Length: 72
Picture 1 (cartoon, one colour):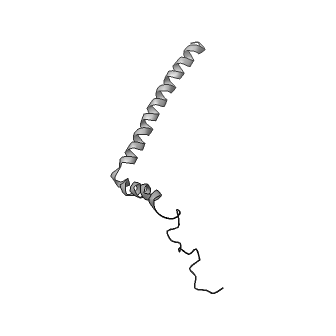
Picture 2: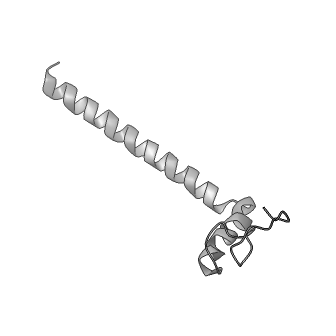
Picture 3: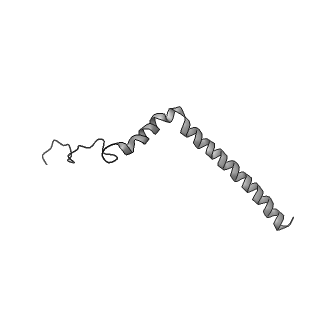
């Protein structure tokens, strides 16, 4: 077996293996994206750009001051 045929054999097997790997990964991503249990999460994430304010400001007061009772 010379190096040309070894290279051709390896290229064929790795090319086929890569194709199979990509098809399997695509199927996994597709199943994850289309699962009904993920609908609520994806709907929330889709609505984020339309919400007012910056991300992570849901629990902060609007005036920017801390909500503390101490006078210090």
